[in-house]
Image (cartoon, helix red, strand yellow):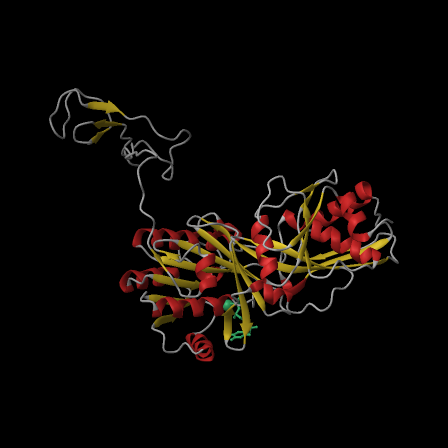
Length: 455
Ligand code: TYD
Ligand code: MG
C-alpha cells in the first residue's frame, strides 16, 4: 500500500505523511501544510486522492479570441452546412440511416479537401480498401491525393495518425472502432463512447479535424451517434427518403457556426451533386394547382426554400380515423386539426387525414402551420388554392395568426420562382413585398372565409 501523503511543502512541493517544522526536501522552515483531499468518499485509486491541482489561468470575457482557421471544400452546400468551412482541431459527427450516402459524401469531401491542399486520411472500418477504391473510381476521384486504410483497432489508428500528421481524418464508422482497453464488443455504447472520446481528444491536441460517421437506426439508435453528440463540436445529419434522390445535410449542433443550416444534394449515378436552387427542385414535380396541394415559403437555416405540402382527406372506414404524416411533426398536425375544429368550425371527425411534404423534405418550422391548415381545408373542401400563391404563418391555439420571421426573404424567394401572391398573417411592421400581392389574414376564421368562401 502506498503511504498516505497528506502534507506537502509549499516551497518545493515535496510530499510527506506527517507535519514537521522543516521540510526534508528543501530545508525551508514552516512551509509544510496539510492538503485536504479534493473528493469526499473512500479513497480509491481512481478518486482524486489527496493531491492538489495546479491553479488554472483565468481570463475575462473581453479577451479577443481569434476566429479558428477554416478550409473551404469548394462544395458550396457542404461549406455552408459546416458554417463556412472545415475548422482545424475539431471533431464532427455525421449521422444518418445506413445506405443514405454518408460514405459517398465523405469520400467526395475528402477528395475536395485533399485537392485544396489538406493532408487527408480516410479510414474505413466497414469496407475493404479495394471497395473504397472501387467507389472512388466510380466517382472519378482516383487522382485525388487521399490516403486510405481499412482498420478498426483504434490504438493502431492513433499511432498511424501520430506519425502521418494529417489535417483531416475520416473515420467510417465510429461503430466499428474498438479499444483493447475496453472490455465490450465493438458497437456497444462503452466502445463507441470511448473511441469517440479518444479521437476527439486526439483531434484537439494535434490540430486535426476528425469526422466520425455514425449510423442511426430508425428504432432509436442503439449505441448510435446519440452518445457521441455531446462530445463533438459539430453534429450533421444526412437525411432523405430512400425512394427520392434528394439528400439533406442538416447541422443540428455547431460550435463554430449556425445550427439548423442545411445543404441540399442529389444522389446521381456519379455520386452526390450539390443542388444550388433547392426551391426549384422541390417544386419541379408540381403540376397544376390541385385540391390539397399548397406551396409553403419556408426558411431552412439562413436561406428561404419553397416546398409543397400535400394533404388527402377521405371518409374513414375505421372507428379511429387515421392520421398519417410524412415530413412534418405528427403532434403538430393533431394541434392544427384541433384548432381548425374548435376555432374555425371545420371538423375532421370520421375523416382519415394524410399529410406529406413532397420530395422527401422534412419541415420543422412552426411557420408551416398555415400552409398545413390550408392544405387540409383545401383537401377537405375539394377546392384548390388560388393559382401561383404561397402560404406561410404560425397558428396559435386561439386561432389567431402570427407573422413568421423573415417574411421579406420568403416573399423574395416566392417572387423569384414566379409566384405572384402570398397568403400570410397581418404584419405589424410593414416591409417590402418583392412585388408579390399580399392577402393578409387576422385569424383562421377570416382565412377560411376569404379563401374558401362562406360555408
Ligand atoms: P453509401 O455512401 O455507401 O451509404 P452509407 O455510407 O450512408 O451507408 O451509399 C450507398 C447508396 O448510394 C447505395 O444504395 C448506392 C448509392 N450510390 C449512388 O446512387 N451513386 C453513387 O455514385 C454511389 C457511390 C452510391
Ligand atoms: Mg458507409
